[in-house]
Image (cartoon, rainbow, N blue to C red):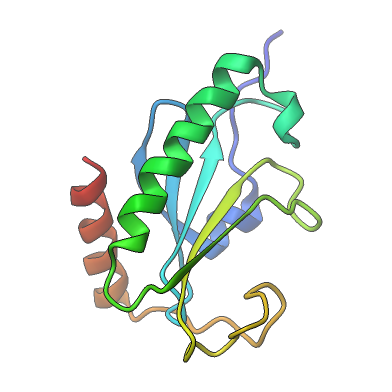
Length: 136
């Protein structure tokens, strides 16, 4: 019996689907404090980079590069934070966060810094469309 991809419930609760890339789901974190996207490889059981084969690693790297360039072009983004932590959510996922020197967590990491500020429903839908069109 082969495993199928299933999104971790915490990732599902904290983000919204934007688009499917060649390997990964692209998701928007529901935290209005930061421009923040996730890449979640659709590889069942993957918890670490080394759980991907060489072709999958290359695809994920290409996706990271593409989304990073788009994120860096967003107004106000001065710095990118890119990380795959997995200490709380074991499923392999890569955070791409746009940062600037006046953001609420600067210069520290966004993880564990304050409480997420959820987007209003209309703003979340608009951002989802924005990213969907940029990634399309």
